[in-house]
Image (tube, rainbow, N blue to C red; front, side):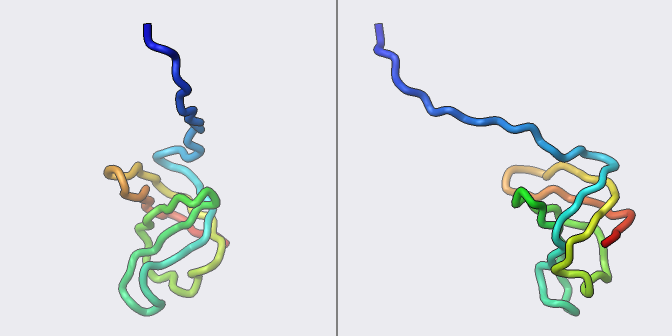
Length: 90
């Protein structure tokens, strides 16, 4: 009979985001300098990133924003969540 060995313990935490129509809060970021073409991102407090379907908000980069819209899961491993933004508030 094999001798029991110590096993790694993994903590599983529930996903705090709801897909579909939802509201999220985070820091607005951009993959390029203001005025240049790039993707807008929302950095969440837990270090996750959401790619945003939004434009013309260079003046808000670096600010904490509240976004309401439709949240979609990532398309695969190593890819980010995405969101079609319906409303942005400060």
